Length: 205
Image (tube, rainbow, N blue to C red; front, top):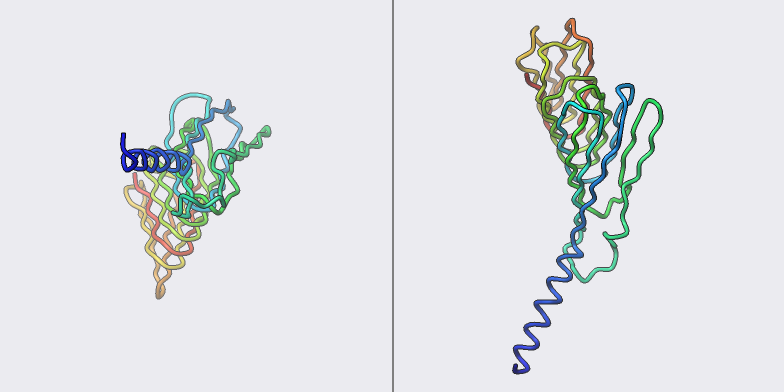
């Protein structure tokens, strides 16, 4: 093997090694009860949530360094862990690191309420049928509801659009300059409250 081939192979191996270290995956499962709510705090990234029949919360998180420079030593992804606190009424999950892009895939029992906070990014909630409180700085929120009726739904966007569709009763929408608000009142058991600083919000059945 000539010197050029050896050098090329070394570059390929180094590049592959650095690429592998540029991403990290965390997977974890938690046993929960029907009395517990789920709280998640994500600085930057995305959160996709689905529901299932059961008594476990399953979490899969992909981490990527926000800095595209592979040679940077600023972020050691392999040292990042999922912080969790569990009490009789709540399971709290977070990765408190603003230097990584976090992509969350979460599956929860249908009996579980949620409290989600996201600094920058999008939230998608599928087949949801419970109480939700969601706060996003910059990004979009989409909720696909398994229910056609709630006690109340309130959507507020500082800069963006809000929409409630497919519910038992008609929703009220108001818009002033760049702000948008949508409200719904019904006979359902649960409540949904979503606030976004900049971005769109939609809930539909």
